[in-house]
Image 1 (cartoon, each protein chain N blue to C red):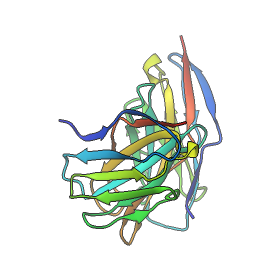
Image 2: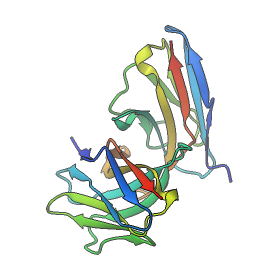
Image 3: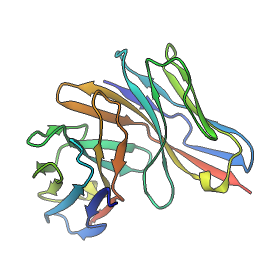
Image 4: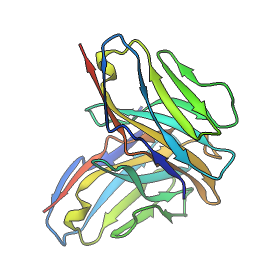
Length: 116
Length: 114
């Protein structure tokens, strides 16, 4: 079964500095998709960034970028120039295709605290 | 511009009571999902529906039933609530095929079973 592991329950970063959140996954599939979602205290789930496994180039969205290592099954999220509004729970997720639809499998999450 | 709407947002039940969580999306998505979120465990899939008329079990389906009423609506029913079902429940819908689409989430429903 596909699993997603986030080994850091909590992380802290100073405002304006850079932080990296780790994620590893287990799969036997060759085509799949990886996501990072952010959940602020409002509880709303917000897509941060998405990576297609067939693309070698790492995805980037403004201050957010990923380091995708397919052979190592690793998908880390780097947040540059951290802001107070980045404080949230971050979830890594993996998606694959099943016969009757597709599902996202989530990691346990990492709480990110941003210090001013 | 509603997206995914869940009701109710909060509910307190006694053990053994039943209730239904309602979910509706207005984005014409085929796939819909119910997840539960518990501390330290992330989001776990309860049931999903790849298209109107089909439903399938996820990781933690025991104690739940679902109905895909039409393309817009996907409800989750607890027939006899248990304290272990105290959780935050999220409905989500998804565009795209082959795992490409972004999941759009509702705001969540906090359920407490006493």
